Image: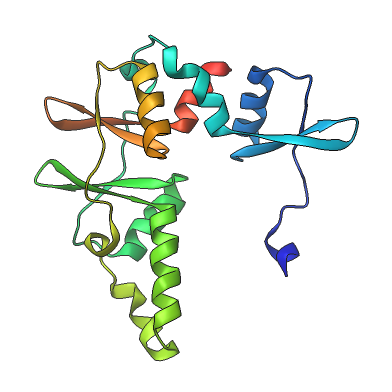
Length: 189
């Protein structure tokens, strides 16, 4: 049943509230969207993607708001290890690094798709092999990165154009941080 996977506390926003309030509610409640209400009636939805669109013109620097702490894994690490790191650190992506170079990125969505596909095509006996699935087997290899001197506007544009929610940040080709839609949302509050 759908009810087993839904939240009992629905967080909404009034159509009369401003963008800052929407960003605050999204961040405080760890959600990616809010139903927009007018006198108890659903009139729309606002998402993190909607909220970063106005930031495309921002001249703020990425290095001022990026996270300097980046959780990384190796291509040869197991996916279950990468997933555990995501859960333990309350993040939705890890950067895949080999010999100090970014070689991939792995997101919650990539992991879920891979596990779903694995389960769909493997019988129960084979599904136990899922713990041997390696990061390199499912990571995205063509990683879009941004230099630390880039603007928030550039980061927002890249995220929107490529339908991604996070960008590794580099300096002289080395990983120095990460910026996510969540980091961008914090500019509102």
